[in-house]
Image (cartoon, rainbow, N blue to C red; front, side, top):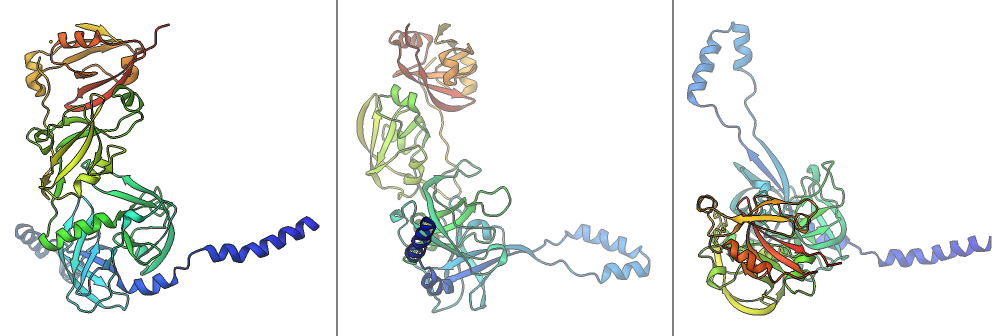
Length: 465
């Protein structure tokens, strides 16, 4: 009985303390919700072409009068569309929302919290970041300020306001679950370091603001992971650092130009880190350098590991496009990379990736040549194979033993080896020479071309018994 009474006392004493430590969102909601809007996109049904219309009229004339009247006086087609959220960023009517909310719309309507509605002009959209800028003809509107998403910390409280499932001005709260999440698009592009939260975000919240506890917008709610169609606590927002850059460009030019380096990159795993002499896995490993690209002009080479750009650390390969994409084309940046085990610092002039341009990297490798090693058999490429694959050298893997170090590392038949350790491989003799330096327990980085795409893997040489 005494123990139970003591526990009840502790609960009574602690409950007000626990409640007092929770944030109060009411002030943020009262001040900010008037600047949050509902965005409605209409897509008009297209009229049939004239030839089809004539055929329909001829068929109608052949019907009995009673049926003819039914078809003549039926209701006309109505517009289709969807809805999302957005927020006002200036008193003269500029509004931020998602690209996918207004994509393909013939008419965009914005509804304010006081029920006023305006037809909105689409100033510009950017599919790569999923952002759009609208404008309505109005003055003295309430608006929101963009805060610093870089100051956000994992575990910090955040708040969302939007119109999930058409329920206007719904408020949900949660915490920042992670920062810098990479969610490549269908085209494999990756320019947004998303903020992950457990805030309840549902269809209709897209384009709405994500607030910090100071009432500043630190993100634009963009997408969720779900199996049911509703929130399961995995929501993603575009950070305000990206929003600010994109919106300024859309406002000034109507389109977005990004920084471009011109490399194909991959992550560094433990074996690759050992083979390149790194203390731990980190950086973006350059698998391929585009011909005529800014990277080639700066003498960045295949096999380099980029670990820092203008003082910003590159921990995983996905960090590199996040950083480069926000840089101004034509600017010169300092880049730290690991080459042959040594740190080097080089200056790179950033190139431009235009709005409609698709980034591409063209292979450019060592010159043309059967050896068995590490459980694989390789031979030289024939001239026809080089031409067909657009290569200038390398050795092709004929077969790989299933219980070998090469197979375990991921080497497969048909792969073309263009680099082994620190040696460029153009002929079979290059491969033979590179193998002479292999010792028991080594970790060796190997650059492959597989179905036209470059890839680095690490092969661990077994220890001698």
